[in-house]
Amino acid sequence: MSGDMIKRSGISLDLRIDHRLWVEALALAYAYISMAMPGEVICITGPSRAGKTRLIFKLIELLSDPTEDDLGRLLRCVVVEAGNTGPNGTFKTKAFTLAMLAAINHPMLSVADDMDWAADKLYERATEARLKSALERGLKNRGVKYLFIDEAQHARYVSKDAMGSCGVMDSWKNLAQTAGLVLVVVGAYPLLDILRNSPHLLGRKHQVHLPRYQKTREELKEFAMIISVYEKKLSIDESVGSLRAHVELLYDGSFGCIGLLRAWLMRASAMAAVKDSAITLPILLKTRASDDDLAVIGREIYEGEKLLEGCAEASKIVPPLKVTTKESKKSKAKPFQKKPRRLAPGHRSEGNP
Image (cartoon, rainbow, N blue to C red; front, top):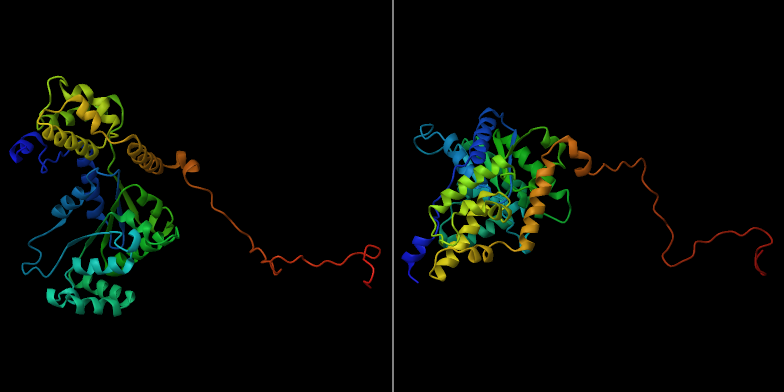
């Protein structure tokens, strides 16, 4: 199998479709960010592979001003990914602070490659509070106005405590306020669970939703048009006919998410190339995500969409707050010992007074 054959049979990695839902989310996000005051938070969320990261870089392109500083001293927009890079996939706030310092090219990180060990020692000794102080000054000195945090839902892996991720989010909001910038947090639907635990942050948040296509007649028609764009880049077997004729099959296997559809067609294209054939219906079915994977993806989408529906379903989504009027008294009894009690006269054993 030659590389040319794979290239002819596959979808170009550079193919990006600016479909209606993506364009609408871009326009709304740009409007919110442009009008936001320093310290305010823009939240961009949607299902996985909906095009959120591409949205970030398009927004940076629109917000950047190359004429603002000819010498490159100022940095209007900064984007950092919130990776869970700690042990066992945990999210480490100190590591993330260092990532933000690197993103603004802070002087404390400009150490030669052969002196990385010295930098590591410096970072180990530096307290997180000192690193955050350096970051705040660095953001101000570089003139950062917009801080984008991608994959922000990874903050939920900061600890086993459910409120730990809320603390991380509040610290980001405080950083935006003290540094005088607009914070843009971007992530999949689990990000909403973190935000709902911070009422103070919710009051400063503007929500942008990058949704999937719904299974309505109008949206299925538009989804079919997007399928036809991909079809022009693929080698489809005659037995399949047009991919648009299988719109419901493709929708059910991608939940109407363009990114999931594209990934599926990429797998089908790769398998067809290995078999030295065009894409057939059996190949499409074989490269479809497993039922278990689709169940997990579907559950996350359903829960995220429910959280964004509004007050109508709030009672089914948000658990009632537990109100405690007074602390319960702790038992002072020793374990495995019967609590002593005084028996009434006439019920005492002999020998007791």
